[in-house]
Figure 1: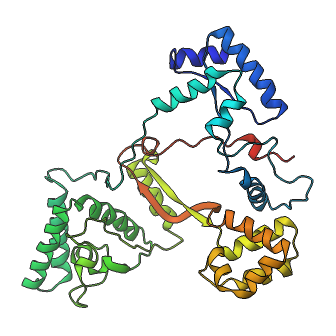
Figure 2 (figure 1 turned 180 degrees about the horizontal axis):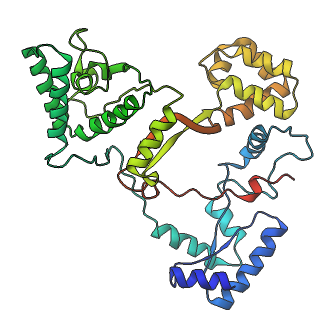
Figure 3 (figure 1 turned 180 degrees about the vertical axis):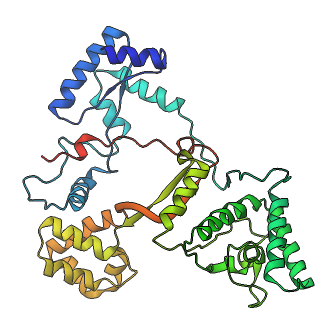
Length: 380
């Protein structure tokens, strides 16, 4: 009661609700009764919600299999992962109204909250963090031009008219597209790496086509010598962020990341995540293992699936696989569940070197991470 009063005071009247759920468990039934009594005693509104983990009721078994793929359990294990109760799908309005028919105001409040929600996600906007310029430098474009010409004078014995024209052209495009700050950010942490004796690659991909990148030391390949095209890297007719492919030695990479974090702030930098998704062959093996099907059977199924094909396409193209699917119930179950799980994330990890640098604290740029539900981690 004390916590509810405190939250109601913090958020203000009409902004704090007591949540009701019903998944047919004794816990939900007990909490429901307690929340109703608490709401009435404190004059707090109630709201009906549902704990959603999959779209349709038919996904229940597939979801349980998925939990046990991640937990490395079999569906027959007594300590396997599963949810108590039912109804963890995306329930319809009719289902929710029936479940909470005795508390119609909880459903009405669900609608009221939904009407108050307004999320607009702006796509296609590039937000580049600022770069601290030396004292007396007017702007990023001026500084980049100074660095580029200074580097060119060191790299070339004689700065030809061709090189001058190419530099002026590239710098003009970079200025027009407002990417000078991006070049300076990359130049700065590459300069740091080299100053610390950390090996840096010569540059890969389209970035090697930029003379500016070569002159300021981001890349080590002369695009004039090899007749490389700048427009493959940055095309004024196609508004897209240029992409520097930089390789750092694995033994010094963490120091480069630490430098970036210190310079821009730990709250404004983060390593990106990578997602390992379930492909057709791997999902067949995973599902078969959880269902307790012999490895020989699942391995045979997996090898029938051509590389690059999803399960739907494989069934259409591989006659032997289709025959097994139509005549063997265990094979049908593996493939049916596999099709529901195919493409989902198997696990996540941290990218070795992909780092986001934000102009503002990242907490203001991405959704908050919800705490994982306890029932996701509890065995039966």
